[in-house]
Picture: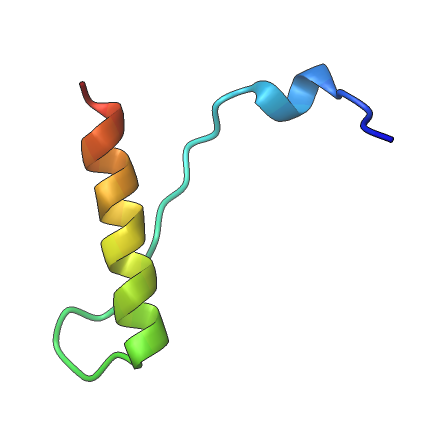
Length: 44
């Protein structure tokens, strides 16, 4: 059963904070690549 909640469809601003210098885990690097690809894709 799916329940639609209108408030969940509202856009949200999300800020990610991370160190540019230093090591990131493979998972963190993959997440940042996916997040950037999503942002780049939504600008069209």
